[in-house]
Image (cartoon, rainbow, N blue to C red; front, side):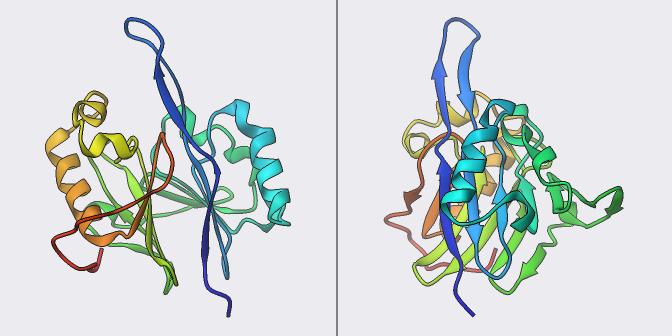
Length: 204
């Protein structure tokens, strides 16, 4: 079977817009392969961007098997209504239609889509954040939502700490992903390569 590919359909952003305000939108990412997975759906204004991005990959919303929203903020869940037939994973909730299935994310158990795609708990930004781990020929990609705001927050921790519910837990989750990933897709920026790791990739 063909290997998975990770394709960013739209880069997210976060731009200061005055005291106590910012303009922000979440990164939207397609995992294409045996299962087609859309990770984060942007804000409600991103509907056409999603449809155009899928069409460019010769896909439609009906071709998406799973939609994963890394957390419940409005700029990450704004278009889940486009995918009524997909399995939805929103933070720690898993549903297919109106049928909900419990899963022990809180105990650290990963949700396996298949051998190469898993959803894991990465709390900190909120108490129930998840990330998607994708194994590809190019390396391990982690689509991390707001666990990482952008590549710039690797050197300026104030960027991610400013919106963190639990900075200590987020720091632990970030370190875990930095040890695991070759590439990270952050919540509000472009995908970046992980450099100068002290350890080889490990298990999530």
